[in-house]
Image 1 (cartoon, rainbow, N blue to C red):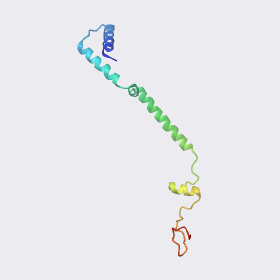
Image 2 (image 1 turned 45 degrees about the vertical axis):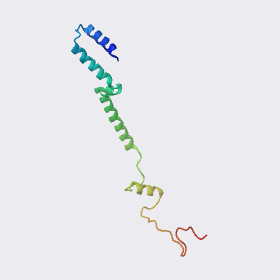
Image 3 (image 1 turned 135 degrees about the horizontal axis):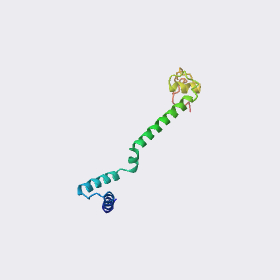
Image 4 (image 1 turned 180 degrees about the vertical axis):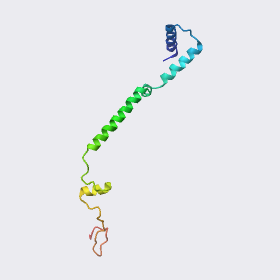
Length: 117
C-alpha cells in the first residue's frame, strides 16, 4: 500500500468517526498499518489463537490415530529376537551364532589367486 492510498484510507476512517486528524495519531496509525502489512498472511493466520488451537487438535488427533494403527498392527512372528540384526537373520533362517571362517585352500595355491591357470 503506497503512502497516498494509506493517507486517503486514514482520512476516510477519521471522517467516519468524526475525529480530528492529529499528526501524532496519523503517525501511530501509519506505523501500525505498515507493521501489520509487513508480516506474511500465513504468519498472521498461524498466530491467531483459533489457528493455534486447531493445529494442536490436529496434532493430537494424528498422534492418537497413529498410535491406534500401530497398536492394531500384527506383531512380529520372531519376537524373541533382541536386535534388528537377530530378527533379520532369523527371518532368513540363518543362525545368529554361526561364525564365518576362512575358506579352506589347497596347499601350494594362494588363497586369492582363484586357482591354477
